[in-house]
Image (cartoon, rainbow, N blue to C red; front, side):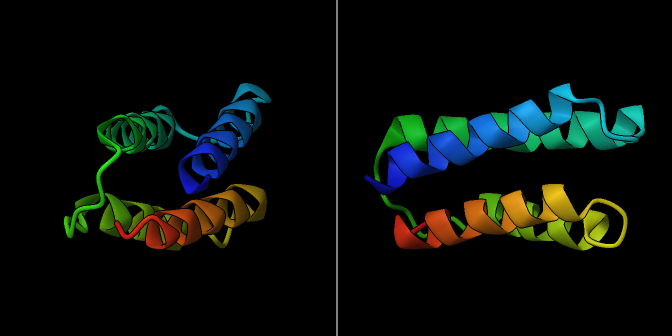
Length: 87
């Protein structure tokens, strides 16, 4: 169940990015890279203690929270789902 919720949140993030928020190419690339890492982790379907993905999402939250609150809220949901999955 948490993996499905996480995928739904990633889909929501993808939809938000499709609406073309005012992000630089670097910021957009960074988010796409994070999304690919998260999707790869979902495909593994095994809880690991590797916090690299979570750390990356947390850094993105810090980076975007002032200027992009909607993206930040979605990223926070992703972190919560990752924690629920034991990642």
